[in-house]
Image 1 (spheres, one colour):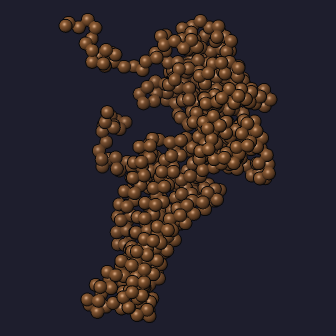
Image 2 (image 1 turned 60 degrees about the vertical axis):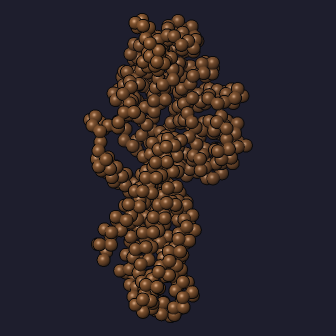
Image 3 (image 1 turned 135 degrees about the horizontal axis):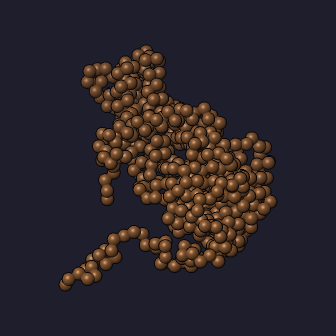
Length: 281
Length: 260
């Protein structure tokens, strides 16, 4: 496994290059000179403790959030410096699966999935229908095409959002927590879909997830982020074998370790109103 | 809880905060105007919004217009009868409605019926990441969400005010002529002879257009900038009604002063 704390050399194979990314939100340092490469045509997983900035990283990559310092290059374009039109042109080539699905609640499942096609392409209605039904079939929801988002379970909504994210066959797909709320059957199919998109179309995928078992089946490369930096990087097998305190604590699910389980707080006994240890009676 | 502070660490005053809101709303208007040409690509969405804020408001506008006209007819008939001038009922009612009551009351009702729903809808879209999802699909929410609703307000308000005026005159006629016995010919002839199309009717329409733009702008701005929480949406909806009412009444005075 490479030393993740060492700066990563820029590579031609990287579709996304993050260099020296620093972000402070509400006074809290999220990223501290983060370096990271997303290799082209691979499935890369971003893992790390809650609140460590995984979703924020995706928002940086898509230009939804500007960094305080550093550069984010996607397909050669420096995202923070792009004009709005150029950013939208780039986003047309990116699929994004939101953590909460973010389906348009006034539209049916079919219209949600068809939305990007209708907005950007003038296609015959029959072709739109065929493309949408093909994508819905891929996520197992062709039969739910006429349902409204309010009639879907959380897992179904996520699969509809996934169909919408891949409707235009993007070069890069960003999945924010794609496995949450999926039953084992749906989880298996989504994993297969991610791999199929990667292997058949050469799509570059980035997964933000907590489920290492699922990630190990889908990802070619895993980044473990904590404390604003990449603390470990490698294939799922390499990370499983890795013996660093970070990987041991994260994958072992231990409360004690370099990643604090408790949010910073004052002394527990004092908070409960007990006299401090060692105080004179 | 710590007090809200600006970037320099100072606590903003209420006046400063209000001015900042007005400035932000002005900039938002410029953004909407810039997005209007792009929003024409979403023509069906604009028509849908006109139907939503216009046609769906018809019942409340017609009902209120009828009752306002009936009350005007009743009150003015008795006041005018003191001076023996009941013949002027049609004139007074129509001038009151065309010049002031039609545009103003319609705008206040419009803010309560359509403005609040626009704010709540956009606020919930913000809270559930639907606006972010549109941005990620390279669809500008200003052109797809904000501009059509703004345009719908500008188009629907004068039409609603016309309906309000018509029902108001019908209500006054019902009370004055059908119930209190005023001559039908006197009611209509005095009205048509004293109402000027340009200085009364058209000026009222201009007011309606302005009020529609103001109410729609406030509603869209409040929804667009609301904190993504249930409390934030609730406050934004309330602010839409309060700010719209104040601005409509203040703008009415200014426009009346200039148009007279």
